[in-house]
Length: 184
Image (cartoon, rainbow, N blue to C red; front, side, top):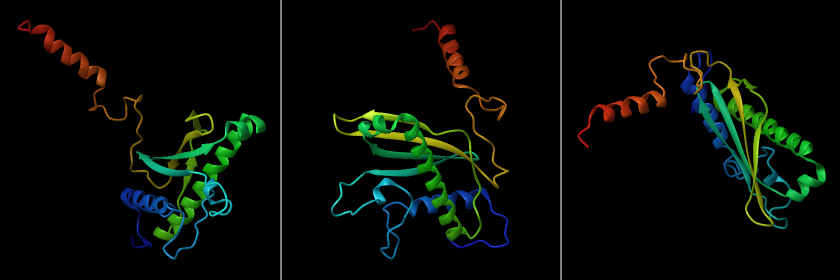
């Protein structure tokens, strides 16, 4: 993707830049074979000698919001030993490291800085796979700067676009069609 200088960034340019920045962290190595440091647990230790930890992140776009999703392996024994509050701090730090990486890679790809403002805290769910392994799935939303021309997306806010009808309205209209027709 060519770097844009002295030109107004479009929403498509911003989305493509963030997507490319996230894709650069996919397998943990750059095009030269050098290890990329994002701040994930899989980067710690020796890959040949240590137990491998599976974790990663992805990004989704919701209007002018960016949702970063983190998925990783977790030990309940470690959570209980350190306490849930400490684990929540670790998850928040993981998101801070991911955002820092995305901003750095975005600057490399596009040539301009990226503005991400957090919208609340991370939402995490820990799921048990078996008696030894557990997974954490966590997501956090950020507002993307410089996307003033993009509408916010919110399922609960009907004022965003009055032409969009709710699913409830569509179901009620469908049921009215059957009520008037007694042929069945």
